[in-house]
Amino acid sequence: MSKYRNLALSTAMATLVAAAPAFADKMGLGRPALPEEIAAWNLDVSPNGDGLPAGSGDVMTGEEVFAEHCAVCHGDFAEGVDNWPKLAGGMDTLDHEDPLKTVGSYWPYLSTAWDYVHRSMPFGNAQTMSVDDTYAIVAYILYSNDLVDDDFVLSNENFLDVEMPNANGFIIDDRETAEKHFWNPEPCMSNCKDSVEITMRATVLDVTPEEEGTNEAAAEAETVQVAAAEPAPAAEPAAPAAPAIDMALAEDGEKVFKKCKACHQVGDDAKNKTGPVLNGVVGAKFGHVEDFKYSKPLQEMAEAGGVWDEASLTAFLTKPRDFMKGTKMSFAGLKKDDDIKAVIEYLKTFQ
Image (cartoon, rainbow, N blue to C red; front, side):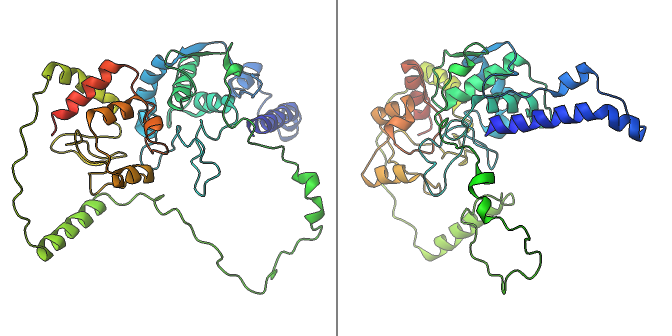
């Protein structure tokens, strides 16, 4: 895909450059482009590595640069914010009715990601990223898709060694010859059909952001109606006293929880975001937040009686996709056992 796009762009550029002097002389406008001016525009990178500048960047540096320049739209873990594109996840969904096409699940060439980031990002401030920062960002995107480890360093020297999962998922566009017998030399331009009918409608209904406050107003109205229709519930017996919390460990967990805040909130004013509110999660049943739309895998585990005890939280935070196949959570997991224990201890403070 990218290979042929880049080839077409390069061919068009060469044609324009070659024709520029003739047009300038004929029309009396402009002048031939200087070599350095052409070089400033000739930034594309091909799948075979042509055009790739020397440089390198590691995952951890990429995480910092990504958080500063990219996370506002794409999320801290490349999971996407609102309707901005998701860059991670979607593995094994391309054969689904509604596939998730990301850098990890769909893009056949890593050069497309590098080229796009370097030429077009950040949004509204394109071409401000250094070569090394671009390598670091792309390395972090690979890490977010579980394609490399957290100590990986991407460079022009090992760039072509990275294997993209969907590298063989595309075919050569041969329609010019394979479908030539369908072509009509004299196409119909008017009154080509007796009638026109709507044969299909959009099935994805969440692509347009709702006006701010709509959901809250609807939820408030529903709450009022339910309160009016149902009698007040009987008082529940007092819950047993919560176990003592290691506050020093919880403070460490608060720092680690910064990696989770892009999707989850805790505290008195917490609201559901990409992920549900985590107040009271330790010891709660799976899917306990009533107004959050959980993934089907989590709903199935909830129906089976799953509980977020320390063992299940530890397994989930270590490798979410291994613990819960098909989870929507794109975060790859915490690498250190101490960080996992600290986050769980921090969550206990919001019981």
